Image (tube, rainbow, N blue to C red; front, side, top):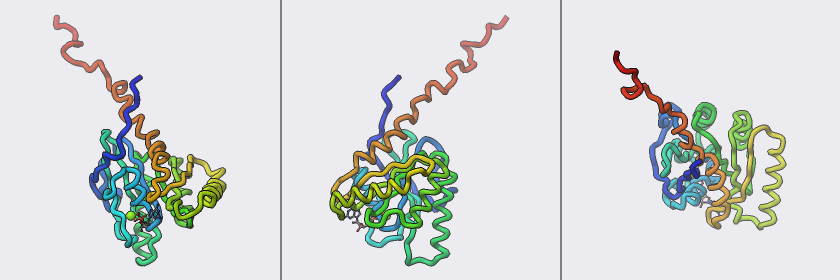
Length: 226
Ligand SMILES: Nc1nc2c(ncn2[C@@H]2O[C@H](COP(=O)(O)OP(=O)(O)O)[C@@H](O)[C@H]2O)c(=O)[nH]1
Ligand SMILES: [Mg+2]
């Protein structure tokens, strides 16, 4: 068997934006999406993981970007997705609810979504909206990596204790949950996040030659005319 081809995360380029599921690119290949509370550090995490400081606009004004942003990678049919941040208090309840609906529709119905990276500020992990998302991932059996970011804000010991607490709360939930300490500024956890994504991107395109029928009916196989 051939060695699996992995994408380079540094190759990530903006592809397109969508407001809702209907505007997303065609369902194909593999997407890994980043979700998280507004201001949790999601854009900074995407920029650190792709080593591209300007890729996902990191903003001091939370809740501004309410679009689903798609990024292509240098492996065909592999995409990263930046989901709208949730829990931004300074907008109407009605608007917040609409954003939640769009987010859940994407998570529930997007078949090429193979895994989720859920970004949480390590100082405020598993807020009610995060827990709601965890439940959705559990229900859908969507493999999820919880990135506990801004870990540079805590001592190494306190960060590890928080990680253990989060893991304790996830224990027994159906599905596949992993956690990792992360810091965009301290460049902590980047390899762990990349290794998590590699697992899902590696198999893409691997079996395509086996799936296509090599004996297409054609002139060569056609019986000779009498
Ligand atoms: N100390 C520290 N600050 C961070 C880290 N990641 C993000 N921030 C800061 O947190 C704020 C929100 O980050 P941003 O990436 O825009 O969050 P988003 O709203 O989830 O996309 C910004 O002021 C960032 O500079 C980190 O790992 N460490
Ligand atoms: Mg952002």
